[in-house]
Image (cartoon, rainbow, N blue to C red; front, side, top):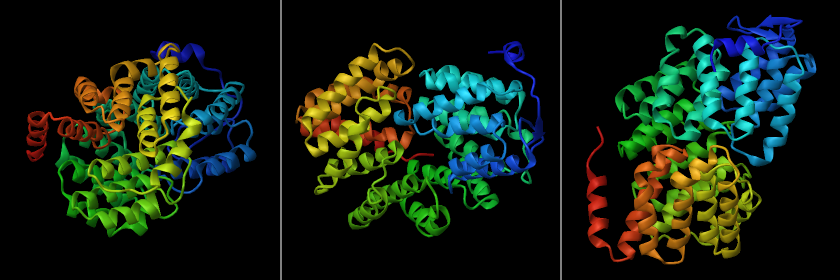
Length: 437
């Protein structure tokens, strides 16, 4: 989508004011802008209740287009299929209001995500950020979409293109730095990523994404004691009132697991990762990730799988994101829920015929990886190994981070070992033993 498309679809606003970075907000008032900026700040830091703040903006000014846009994004950026109706409602409301070019582009990107066209949405937001480099919401939405698509280069480059337009005294600069740090890490620029991430935390200590970016560097470099210090010693700062805390608790648990501190891992799992019993998909992914890693090591996790699997059941027919399917299958296998596992595979078959980018996510990686987890659980280790070897080098194509996708390699190694492919298992371990730069 180019500038001419933006121009042709925009409607002139009847009433407008500016946000804190001098960008026009159609239908806004000073009071609604204050609530809107509060919501954006909460979303950037992953703290508080940005939905309530966005609703307050709409109460102050029902005609505020960007408040409806923000409501749509808040219902999309968690990959929650159950939130799609609310996102559609917010998009319809936004499109019924006057909108400028920038707001119209947001609406186009939102429509693409709702329809499962993740790549098209990322491109719309890419063009938007080129035109309006200080639209932090567009950058954050685009960065999230890059993550869900596993596009490491765009995680870095989307932010690199605009970072020169930001100064440390600008609201939201910390988030731009935090996103850039994560993109650098996913591209293997570890030293630079850590420096930028630490700078983001200095600017805004509540920025959960920036804390997480530095944690990723330490995870990739196997700096487990540094990771325990980074997250463990500052837990009260990044975890308080944070809806991203579960993921950072997961990172802390990984560091302890790497140090063979299993008691600490289980304590974190029970109190922080699984303890809140969150129904949010992103939190359930973390639960599946840590329990599966423990189980691969032969550690008894007791009945922890059962409660997690029950929370995954409403997502069986979501048909919207293969990465989530893989983690649901882990829970069903761990809990011995064979019927739910088969339902999930049937849902994937339907999704393959449904269209949208999830078809590619499934065909490239997700369908094989999900079937491999089931095969592993049924002790068909040779089949699990064969399926995972076919996709391990393409695993980025269905989303997530390097740290999350590492579970595919860990499962492959264990499948090879248990299936008698000892030379393969040894070769894979040797590959992992080399230090990261």
